[in-house]
Length: 88
Image 1 (spheres, rainbow, N blue to C red):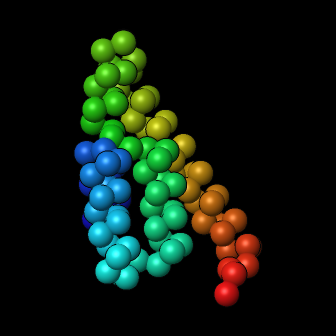
Image 2 (cartoon, rainbow, N blue to C red):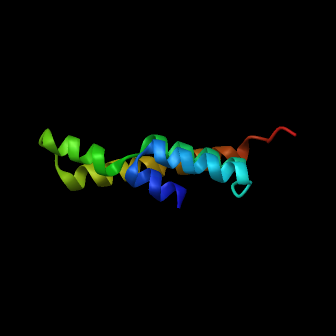
């Protein structure tokens, strides 16, 4: 839920919900890191897309390229995170 809200409505709302969930202990540190990485790369899809459309860009190219880039980088971070040992 946190990722979807941050993805569509913006990083400030998503981050606020993420902080609340982190304080309750429902999310692991890895989940928090990956969620923030994804939201940092692909946040506020509705507002940003509308702004870029006003400049004359193609809607589908913007949405798919942005989503694909965010998913690929987040997946790479998840794989790299498994290789790095966690400090006790």
